[in-house]
Length: 117
Image 1 (spheres, helix red, strand yellow):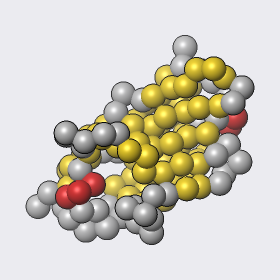
Image 2 (cartoon, one colour):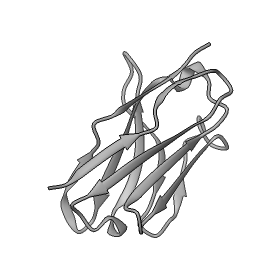
Image 3 (tube, rainbow, N blue to C red):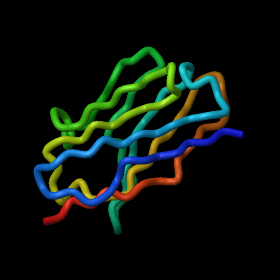
Image 4 (tube, rainbow, N blue to C red):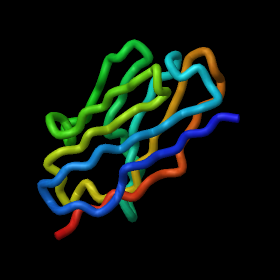
């Protein structure tokens, strides 16, 4: 059974930082690409970072320079370091796994990040 467990969310003041984690079990994690998505109330889900199985990363302009995605294949975990947070970063954040060799993809349960003073 594949499980994705996100942690590290919460309430932070503007300008602050958080690090999200997504611990994965039940699959060969190193073979999967991972994306972090977020969805704010009334808005569509959007990709905020991506890391390939080989470690290549991608960020949209909205978070470039502030967010960093990384993975530790030995721990089956992907991280999202978020710095210089603004209220516009408030959303539920999800990790998502996909692989060309697996017809299924996997989405975590989501974790709330709230940026507010």
